[in-house]
Image 1: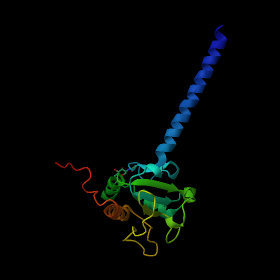
Image 2: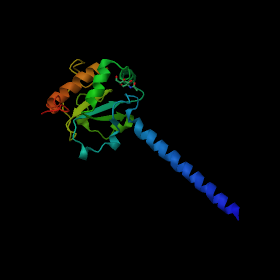
Image 3: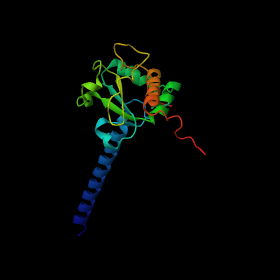
Image 4: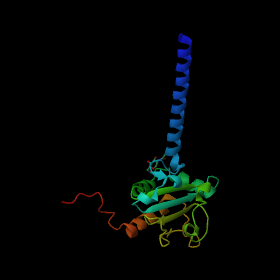
Length: 176
Ligand SMILES: *[C@@H]1O[C@H](CO)[C@@H](O)[C@H](O)[C@H]1NC(C)=O
């Protein structure tokens, strides 16, 4: 009676293959939180961001797949320039929330203080309260939270650290 054994074995194999494929797909989708905005940054999708255990200042990046300005900014984030390197460095001190397309829907008015344009970066305290004063100082004063390149973002991240975690420069240094 080997036939029934074989068929249950092959059924088991199919099942195992399915589990494997599902696992790999889940892994791929969770590791793609960057959506192209530089994989060296530990991006998190809004749905996977657990603010109740968050201790870091927050960068909320709002963008859409079809938006030209977003595509340009995104491309410049992969240029490997010194500014990108700095953004990657600074990003370790933030929760980096990557909000694509309709994921922006649950975010209230306080996340679009001067309009719902994109790309838009809103800095927030660890508890999620947006900090309006943290804006793109080198940008268009009518669209204060609009960024178009890593240099602007890098400057704003530095200002955000100075304002929200003034001790950031000393972190990681060994003190005797
Ligand atoms: C992300 O930025 C780093 C630092 O500039 C760069 O070395 C790396 O190539 C970038 N990642 C991608 C996927 O381009």
